[in-house]
Image (cartoon, rainbow, N blue to C red; front, side, top):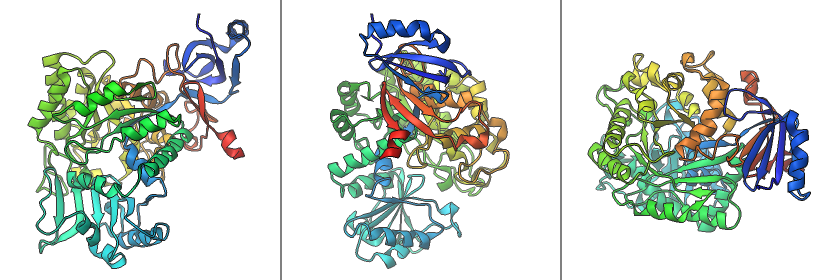
Length: 553
């Protein structure tokens, strides 16, 4: 007999098993749901549970609040999200190059020594939309290193002091898959991109102690809980061969100290040497900390013309972008992982990258068979499809891990960069679901903030969370239903983490991870979605966020 410890009640529960919201009671033993019953049956069940608990049963009645499985952000760069949302750094988009410099001058007053870090600039959103250079930073900071990471996390903007400290001079050669930008005279501009930028970040971040990083992690965990996010996938951002930004030691430390208030799924970089992942897979078996598989980059981003396309960019016919990893190397590594039954998640934005990734996954499936039950290969971002590739995801059991707020980060950008013929196959959520694919929602934080309601709003309206443009939604035929969006942000993301058998549903046997809101997310009007408020976040039966308690602090 399983002893029930807690019972959670609500008039409005979305289980994820169907599209309905209904009055239910959820009986929890330890950290798992053991029974779900209609509220009309509670009078009969409650005395039994009470007797079995020896009078120690806790009953939490959420009234008519909306209860759903806890949200699961399927794509977070935890290290960068934590650091850039902490006092260690700052974030902003900026209105133009000089505005960003001015903001850094203001931030410098809060950190009088050492590196100055910021994240979030996007030159294509500026007026004028031109790439910055080190000159403006040098004028304000002639003696102190400054590094500004772009909003898409693919480009660094450095001043001369930073370049010197990092050992980059006019004779330096960028690593494969990256670049050091130069002007017409061959002089470094201070812009470093793709793999070259990722390789430099660990050396910059060494300025912070483990205690500072742990505090930043705890602060970001609090942000996740406030947004009703109970699980995340911590996706590697490769720094150099054999090194990425998965700080499993910090996660493990917080777990050991009882401070890990979300389930963390680690996806280190896919390399020839699988030893680091296999050690994580062996060592982290706690329900709150696991290592399900690998991550690897296959291309860059469309706005920088580094996403890999089959046909040239409309805005720059001289290029189709490029793969960031040689396709032969990617194939070899994915097949090696498939041989051992390990899932792989591939960053692929351009249609050529998506097509090649699907070809590799298909070959791996043909050679080694499907992955072990419950595990899935994934493609991350998938912004620009070839029409014939949309239906292949479902056929190959590849999860589409997408970030709805990304659709409107660059208004008019897809039309400018890719032209009208390719735009209809960008972020085709409706098409993917109709073809039977599994969607897994996330944010790519810190590319966009881990605001759960913005994720849902973007998915169902196809509009920007801030401006609410365009009217009627961008490619509105690709809008999806509320229940579908909720499932993508719960059970779909659990599938990407290989845990759809125990996460993402309100059902017996599933972990008691819940989000409680003051608004029915299935029934409310579109313009009410973002005004909903998280009342409580429950992780394994433990309340890790309470709006009422926060208000009293």
